[in-house]
Length: 183
Image (cartoon, rainbow, N blue to C red; front, side, top):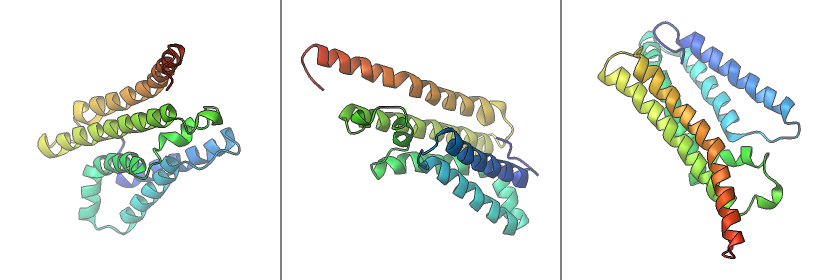
């Protein structure tokens, strides 16, 4: 969100620092919890961007200043849909820390995580397209709508869906089991 003309190095170093701090904080909060694909991918991605920024030409840094947000969102799209393609939706690792182990292999639990991961992938895609539209079509990387409002709204929608949808699935399962249909 901070990336822009003259701010690439600062932005990527802040993103890398925050990613590392979040990774470390999650180890403290969830003692014994596993490393998460998304957490590790963020650290690797921002470390790679920082390395590229250190050796890049001025022209490459200008390109990164303009398009780093879109590149980041596209990387997140690839993580989301890639994790689904390898049959390990990235939300599954977080969900397993909140749901009893007895449900981990149920069809409903797995399907719920595919849906939620897909919604996150779409939110990241919307953010990338909005930012790209602002940068490429409007030629205005600081456009409040394409650079902020649409992107933040997509993420808020994904967060809200993530908290809402599991309850919907639990209700459906209870109804199906209560009516003798099974699930």
